Amino acid sequence: MVHIHGEIIINRPLEKVFDVVADTSREPRYNPRMHHAEQITNGPIGVGTRFHAETASMGRPVDMVIEITDYHRPHTLSSTTHSTSMNVHGTLTFEPVPEGTRMEWSWDLQPGGVLKPLGPLIAYIGRRKERTIWTGLKHHLEAHPN
Image (cartoon, rainbow, N blue to C red; front, side, top):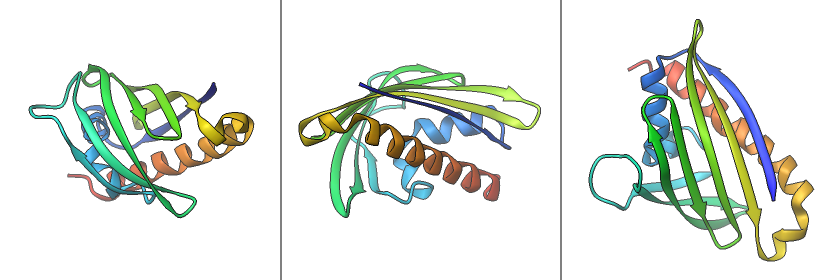
C-alpha cells in the first residue's frame, strides 16, 4: 500500500471549496488529466454518490468509479476510487484559516497488476500529481470567485 498526504491553502470560503471538490463532475475544470466526469447516481451529493470519470495515464484512457463514503459538509469528505490498475481510499479535510481554507488530503493507494511492485515510484508520481491537481483547484477557484 502507498500513502500520500498533503495540504494546500485556497483563498476561498470553506463551503465553496468543499462544494466544488465534492462534485467530482467539476474536476475536469481544474485537473488537466481528467477528460470527463459525471455523476451516475441520482439525488444530491452525499454518502453513496458515485461518479464515472475518465483520466489519462501514460497517454491511455483510464476509466474509474469514485464513490463518496463519508460526507460531513463542509469539513470532511471521504471516497473510494476503483480502476483496473488501482484502488484508492482517502479523506479530504477542510478547515477555515485566515487566508481562506486549508484543505488536506490523505490517500491510501493499492496498486494492482503490473503496478503492484512499483510502490515507491507510484508514491513519488502520486505526490506530484496530487499537488498538481489541488494547485489547479486553487488557481481555478481564486480566478473564478463566484
